[in-house]
Length: 240
Image (cartoon, rainbow, N blue to C red):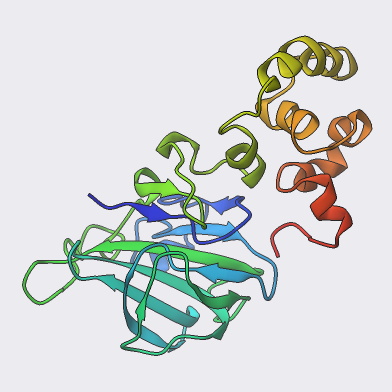
């Protein structure tokens, strides 16, 4: 069973697997996007989604700087494109969660800083890509295989695309947290928002240290959804 970690600390999906809004992918011989694009600022860390051996650590014409990581026992590999600084070499064995590179916008098939993440299944003999002619050059949707955050915290596969705050705050509530949510935070946010608050908004107020004004401000969502207030005040920035 393939069990992957998310490759970045802060999670926001720019483009999911299989999408094809324009004929760009058709020109590349694909049925659609053959990976998942994560929002990532120039220089943010990219983490190994699993333990394995580095198959590629080089510059690719279209995808820029790329790493391929092989799980020999599981017979699959993950692919990381558009990187900036690669800190691993071909043949290195990496542990899950290890920093392998920083992100950027290298290559020509990109419109801005992000990480293109791919997953391909391999045969059990020569580690060739299975189903290469599936319309995505053998890539499969990695969504159902994300089981952990970048640092190994277990998550539900249905939550894999949720922002970091969701995973951090919605697991292992401190004593009394549920009652604070139900009887204090939810009624107050409902009144201020004019609707029921989302889990992200509830968690930001209850566990993230954010005040009401920050949580109900749409311009602050990209921050309160990814980090606690004290982290932000110390200078941490989202997607970096």
